[in-house]
Length: 260
Image (cartoon, rainbow, N blue to C red):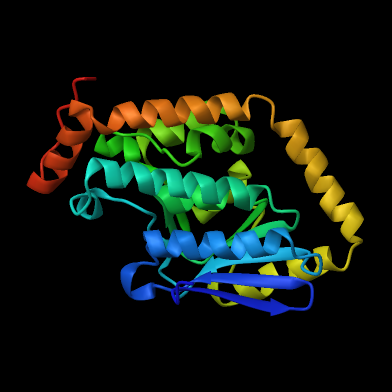
């Protein structure tokens, strides 16, 4: 079990914390596997009724899995394996019987933004931000962003957010329905746990049943979209555009994408 992921239980509430503040709470392979182990345990936990997921510190919820600098240390095969690991984890997180609340305590970038989309509810600190910047690097979000985001903010807005790679502040996240509420940074975790406690005080058959119904209603087309995402992401990794995006970032220039 990774020491960089912590799980605390308090009655019917569990809190998971990504604890790598010195590295912007990056989702390394060990962190992803640590999160997956906790999710596996929670799947069979009849006592816990709500889960809060957050990051340590106040700067980052998490910078995600990859950026152009991190990518340079991995082979393309290793990158695809990381993406597959993330997808497996995010699908399992979304399928948990408990209500999962993401408490965005800072910036949520790339794969970490996608992690938050696999949660049922998101709350944000007033200074938190959200971005899926992969298109600026010649890629697209490969861990569920294009699959989950349209169901939250709508098709047109999802495409605009993904295809521009721009950053959303907390006020815009709330306006779009991406987060349920915004709180002062020093109140965020308290508010997230208070919401989890209110959910936990309800009947488990009611809350778990409601989640199953909602997920079933929204699942139409999900498998097909995920399969397409996986296939396109695999092909993208060997594209000239991805190599150009990394080279442009390394050389401090604007990328020259060709669509190949």
